[in-house]
Amino acid sequence: MTDLVLTDNRDGVLVVTLNRPEKKNAINTQMWIEIRETFRAAAADDDVVSVLLCGAGDHFCSGVDLSSFGEVAEGEEHPFESAARAVVEFDKPIVAAAKGVAIGGGATVLFHADIVYVGESLRLRLPFANLGLVPEWGSSYMLQANIGAQRAAELFYTAEWVNADKALNVGIAADVLPDADLFDHAMSKAQEIAQWPVNALREIKRSLRLHHLDAIDAAINAEQAGMARQAGSPENIEAITAFIEKRTPNFRDL
Image (cartoon, rainbow, N blue to C red; front, side, top):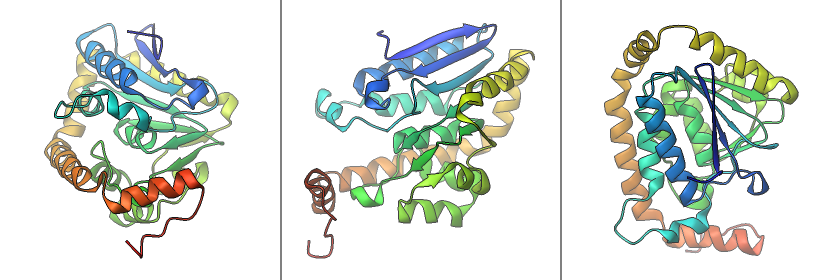
């Protein structure tokens, strides 16, 4: 383990901090491994009652570091996928505190938090359509479950930027705080949760999540199949090329 994911147990609240601020906490292969191992260990540790997930610096997470995908041998499961499973299967309350950018995987992980608080600086985006790709982390189901099918479709199909007020209004966030107050507010809520017995909280979360798990699993499988078809497709290549060349992509002439 490195210092890319920091953990600090504060009287039952495990503060998990994505710690790559110079890259806006973009998640590389090693970070996926550490996220997976952190959540697996926290699930087995009764001294962890709740989790507070946040990002170091001014941003929550700018998403997947695409350069890291070449670090895994062809045919092997990428730690991105096992990290997703570890978060999906985590059986204790997760509180998230997000400010600055939350893009791609840095947004979809929030949909698996039980409570999300955002700072006024939040800029969230689901950039899958504009990259010629598909959603991940079961987000194609979870966002609908959290905010409704039409609102989820709007955000996925348009790939629009979502600010803090819209995140609150559509139901992604429970509350909006000034950036300076965000962590303390989220921490106080995580501590309020952590005063209760851990097994009772496990059972409550199981009751809340049980009827979603089959649908999440189906969504993850469908997303992985769709990603396999789209990654490296002409649409995906054009999107990435246009991004590198700083121009508007042309999907019509493919």
